[in-house]
Image (cartoon, rainbow, N blue to C red; front, side, top):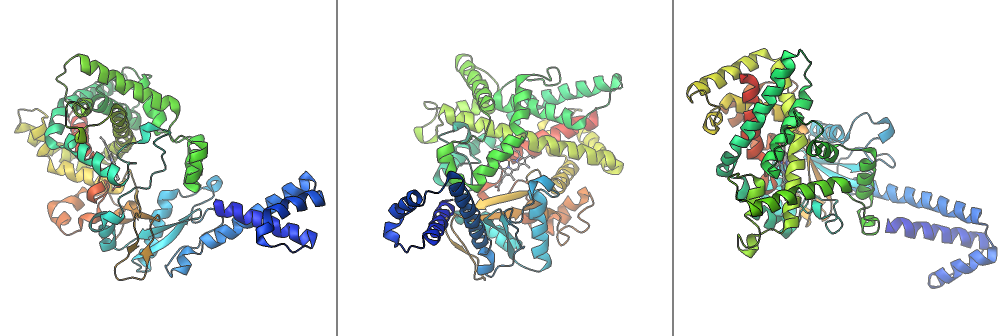
Length: 507
Ligand code: HEM
């Protein structure tokens, strides 16, 4: 941005010089510029046109230079256009960012490149294709790629000071503090809460069936997921089926919907992150962050007064408040609210849409559905017909169905990493520069014929023990990989999904 302004002022300066037929030297520039304006008595319209033309020329020159980044470094790239780069004009959008990143992955792979370059507007993005390189970025050389490259401003919006956005040491500290919250022992304690939500869902499905009402599966699993996360994270009994207009459901929807204004905010932040210091653009609507802050603080306060047997995330976070644990391991109330909010946001839409896809695929493939039901019945036969934590642990085919759904419909179809210190790519001349962004196409890997023959076919057998052993774990990364892997993976995959699919198929 600074360059654009300087360039446009410079161009204006040269236009003035040209009009005056004068020759001024740089040190006199500002004074001369003002004197020239006054002397020549430009009309405001003339001045406006000059500045506008200068700005357009400066912007064009800037983009031209920015769009030569990959060419200069001799990296294979996809030809960008002004001003979108390799994105598409949002008015005629045919493919979203996800498709663009996946197509780039495919294109570089078909040319047998280890990596390639694209542009989001003026910003260069590196797309790694080579599996070893992807592994290095996510795990081995993680110290170069610790951060997601957040657009948030914590001072302006404390709610965004969460684990996903946190960077460097702040992230390390937070991750160390929060990891014990997601152990299998802690997950086991949440089982009954999820089970209760799933029975509420079944009651709703039964009731609708009796009334011969059509069922909107996505809406049902969204209500159910709101209840699960509301219960496990915020300690609330939402029952969105009985109260579809409840505030929690309303604000949950609002927080995950991308409005036109929201897209515009993201666009401005992405193009000019520096501008946020002046404009203080919010990532979240104020009413949404106010609601979640109030909801969490209310529960926190009531928990401080009455003892509870619930071992939900609120309770686990509360046990990390100053006084309960040593200072280095404790969280402030604002930090707790921010984490609870990210658990909600990260878990809500991702799992709701993915669960809906899973049920859809089971409905479309009767044989897989029958096989899964058979497994559930056999396992329950060994567990007194009870869908217990231990019972779901034995459901291996269920794992295969879930893994294939996550391959087919990864809720986060690409991962991004911001390079925090120069990284020379082994066996190449390219140095990934500090501050630049790497985008890993999860969908590209999941749909890569080399790893998954006939990738467009839904087939849980790809995840049988034998088939899994033939592939690298880095070709199935719906939850990311390495130290920054999704902290909620166990919660979602083991508890939430298995419980839901189990109940849906049983009753
Ligand atoms: C199907 C459901 C979910 C999927 C597919 C998913 C996927 C992901 C992915 C791909 C990442 C980024 C990983 C990376 O950069 O390498 C991530 C991060 C994260 N996820 Fe999930 N997630 C899901 C559900 C959840 C749930 C239920 C929670 C919380 C209870 C959660 C909490 C987080 C957090 C806090 C992060 C940031 C971790 C960090 O930066 O250290 N996610 N998730």
